Image (cartoon, rainbow, N blue to C red):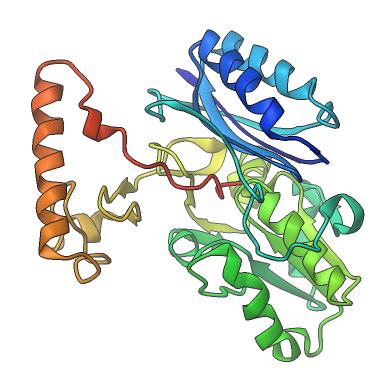
Amino acid sequence: MIAVAALYKFTPFPDPESQRAPLLAACEAVGIKGTLLLAREGINGTIAGGENAIAQVIAHIRALPGCADCDVKFSHAPEMPFYRMKVRVKQEIVTMGEPDIDPTLSAGHYVDPHDWNALIADPDTIVIDTRNDYEVAVGSFAGAVDPQTPSFRDFPAWFREHRETLLEGKKKVAMFCTGGIRCEKSTSFLRAEGIDEVYHLKGGILKYLEQVPENESLWQGECFVFDERVTVRHGLEQGTFQLCRACRRPLDAAALAHPDYKDGVSCPACITERTPEQRAGYAERQRQDALARQRGELHVGAVRPAPKPDAQ
């Protein structure tokens, strides 16, 4: 089994570029793969490899300024869920597009997974899923509001537009995401908007699915993750969805059986979003990939652009 570590930490990095090369070297030295983002606001990403190798890299990360208590969610995958290792410097470790937001100064209240059910069952609480629309379609908490946003960057505008309706008759706002980073930043945003009673799920959905027994769970469906596992279920077992290689959306059995689905080329969701020329390119990539696998090799075309680690 391959160990998988999803992590993030909001902490000031005055010069994140200076951390990039040493961090990449530490990962490559022990065969770790995945994606890590560095920005002036901290670190975010998911990595995979052997247990000891993961432990060494986590120790390196926790030695970075302000990262001693870096939040890490551990799980396992039957095979390596990444193709390569990338360490990138970005403007934000999770893109919201609100430069004045600082979660280190104004984040909401953490809620332990074992206390989450009581909070979201409270009729005074409005529960908001801060993830992207294609993630929510795979699974969510019962009764949660789906913003139907294609990107986390769209969340502030959505909230400002619907604020009055959302908060009508509610005293508390509870938000969640995959690993905690988006809902933590969202609570900071809401507090900047003048809302104090805001809460977020500590460790995100991943920690909830790990710690809360399925027979006590209010989670419905599976949880999308931004790697080759595609989705996970209770106990963080690998889920049932597959990935469209053209648009990287999760596909259930019905989508896989749809006439518009072609392995590596198209799915019902993206068939009208891509040109015939693009689909021809995907088909050629898929052909080369299949030939490489027959030879026991990994075709260079299989090293596809990884989605942003908003899986947190």
